[in-house]
Image (cartoon, rainbow over all chains, first blue to last red; front, top):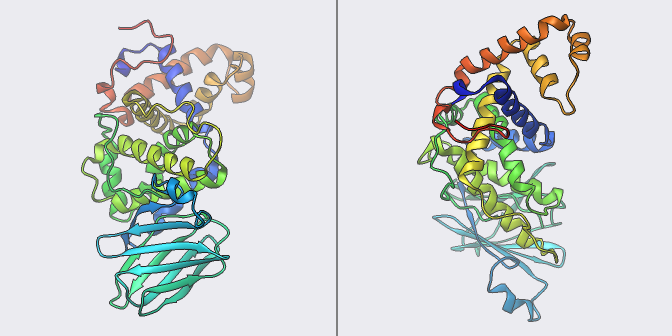
Length: 150
Length: 202
């Protein structure tokens, strides 16, 4: 392909390639590079399987008195992490219920919260920016969520 | 978040550079990871800009797209189709973020999916930038000035780069030849029919 292009065509293609790169803010690229910090973190990535804001069923709920409660569920092969935002705190439930430790990762660092025998935990205050939760079971296995901003 | 393992890519195209980069990054090579990000961040960004996302949403999308890739590095079914995977993943994360942010206005005015052609263009752009990066600094500076919009005059280029005006044409031809011969462009021959604007066609 490129061998067949004349100089003008190749130059035009180079111009497009350079322009596309120049349009990207440096923080956006850096965010991508920083993600590598999670490489080899031995944790299962749980998928967001329910979000009260995006789930179609939420439209019905939106008319009820629970409308203001944001609820999210992350599911991995082994367990689920259910989250609810209420009264300035983030309440969570590990299903199936089990004790462990919950890490809240933000740009500022990591804080930990206990998870009781019933699988219940609370994160206070709600992180103001993006955060990611990582649950450590008593067996030492990890399950983590993707990044969330509430 | 919408973290799904492997969405279908919009393109059936292969980027010959991608599998080796994925293998190296999966083995712990941060440099290879950075190169993956450098190559495809422009495509990810360009898809994101079709959605009216706040900076905060954009950051969430970027974090999750790349986090998903970190997790999938060694497991991608078709590492050569990395760009297509990234395009589909980015679009899905953008849609999720746009829906969750509950904006009153239409959320995706220009979104009609990501076409295979766009992915191929992104792969080609990445390869061209990689080829450019291999050139001597003098060639890189010259190419930057030549493609600048509005273009620099040869007189301005001559002053900036310290080369005689009459040598610019020759240097330009030599630099372009080196790009054509660059190993970074190997395998791109399969990307036919997607020439830049102004191409009269084969």
